[in-house]
Image 1 (spheres, one colour):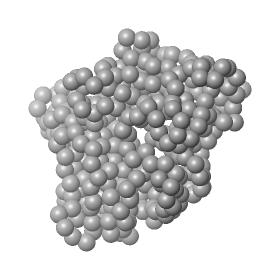
Image 2 (spheres, rainbow over the protein chains, first blue to last red):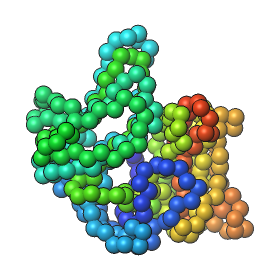
Image 3 (cartoon, chains in turn cyan, yellow):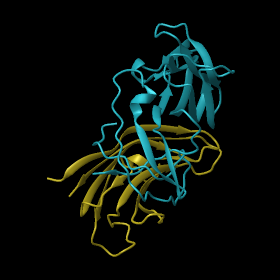
Image 4 (cartoon, each protein chain N blue to C red):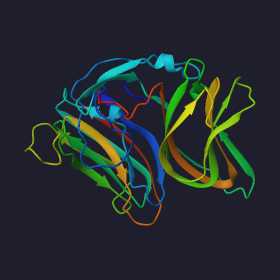
Length: 189
Length: 123
């Protein structure tokens, strides 16, 4: 996004993209700018955000835009396998984080699978952490410490299917402890 | 010369049945409080089964008013919306403190899609 940098003033919880005519607006700005990562996104590099939500003070890690809204529609090449893999610069780093809360929004999915996968090295091999085959709007928890959704040093998304397929999705990641809401505020011109 | 801002760069969205829409991220809503006028250009390369709204709001917790609504019937490539701070309160042409976009499907059983860009010049 080619936006003019605007200070971040956390307060309100958009928590997703549920459409509403009315939305409470920010009230108590505090400015914390995340540093811009040049490679895989480290949780430590996103900075801290403090603010208020529903009247209560909170202090939590910033939200990582794992993938902003992305719409992929392959050509009509009949039946051939086709993969799209997230560019390296957007991968999550798992070295210093034990837990990520992922907000997974898939507004459209046809004939493909969205994988969240992880590897100890950039070259792989990659292990599937989560996978989705239909539209959804969920929060999932992945951990480096075990369980069914276990990740390691690198986390990325991949889409696989037989062309033609279509998918439109967005992924957000909150490192660390449970966070119920996304905190943001309008950018100032 | 005013300040030229990309309110949303080319955005491609697609929604299936049951997905009612997508709203601009809150941190990307535009705070226009330092400006008295805006000329907003909405370019729509395709839209089907949904409506793209440009909206504004003045107060915390207040209601958003629609500056412009564009759907398949009204889409004409590019639409220009001129907004001024000094017009009667409640008028759609009034430049509100906050500006955002959202796309809503019609609640029909059909999939929807929209491809658009929104830019503005603020003075």
